[in-house]
Length: 171
Image 1 (cartoon, rainbow, N blue to C red):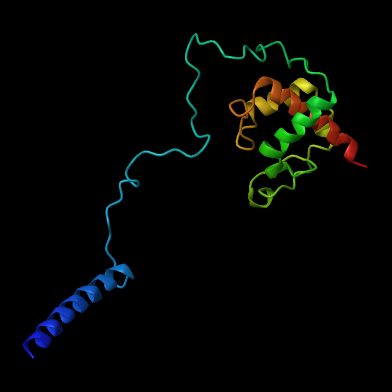
Image 2 (image 1 turned 45 degrees about the vertical axis):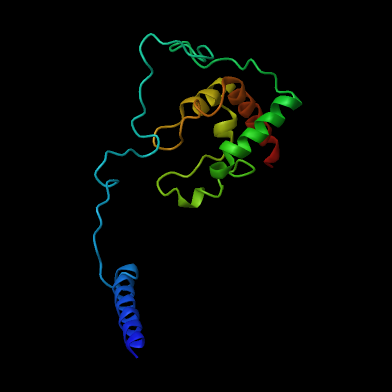
């Protein structure tokens, strides 16, 4: 009998502690726990990128010299370049510009201020290869991120060669 009474009190104590823990676990009683993530400095993606260090030399060399206009396309638009450009476009561009480059990608409905450019329109297709290359390299302020860190110089020219094939898809 004494053993049953002791077991009763042990189970009562365990049940009482479990009940109290359940109040906190199921947010019946709200407790503000300190979060150090809220008090540290943070930056949004592409916000205030660090400048290039002074007197540094780019790994791939200069892609364009300021004041001399858009560069010439050194990569011939052969099958290999266009195929590579299509793969890179699918990875880096298709989410916004869509599979056919019409500006209707999966992310496009969520871009409220500016919709992605329709790459099949004459306003884009009439630009020089160098202008398209510089747009991919530097991005468009508040509209498109710069892809110079994601794509090498050769890969950016391949994407330009692929964008030129999108013109044929339009009626």
